[in-house]
Image (tube, rainbow, N blue to C red; front, side, top):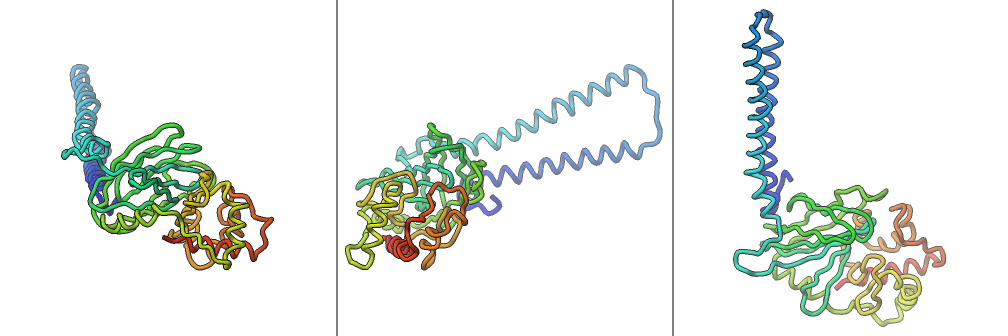
Length: 311
């Protein structure tokens, strides 16, 4: 919020700094009045009429005018800010790009529905173009979550059975952190979203690379891994062109993602194999079962094969 990178975030920062300045002044006035009253030693008897008039002034001034002016100022600045984040029609009549985000315990499902050649699905990674508004349609698959990218704008609740909408825009390329902002269980803190904004041409290239079926290979090197995936993983995870399950995160491009487990560990050589072996220790309570039936060599081969799923 203190380093905005989009129009919505800048508007929120402007309102926030304005509120801080205004209420700092109010606090200063209150402290000054308190000190003045504290240091005042003389006590003059007042008539009943004076007491009534003085009380009326404090009630009207401090109880009505000050709160009324404060609320009016906040509305004048806050309502336009909120309206600019609504998914209203754009001035030119063009439809903004739509990205769907679904919150799960404890990971993010990200869908790009308007790709022309089929839907692109990824997990825990959100890529968006720079310089154009994007409408995010957010919902939840289990409990209440909240979608929040602080440097791009405000947060919005993600509710099961309901789609909420928010419009955000990134004005510069870069990587931004997203976070679930509604307590959703024991691993709420480990539900991070990697957000990358890139130039439109690079974004189109990124999107096109994920429209084709995943390159799973057909060599003998990872034959054991492919068989293990089909037997133990395909019932929950989707790999484009191989399996269509949607219980767990989509793995079609898992090898290209910067983190695993929604930010629990960095993606590097051997990271997926380590995650498969000890994921319940790294992120206790996640819904993926322990792979006791697979030996260490098979887990390592499976992890190495999944790392090759990189468009």
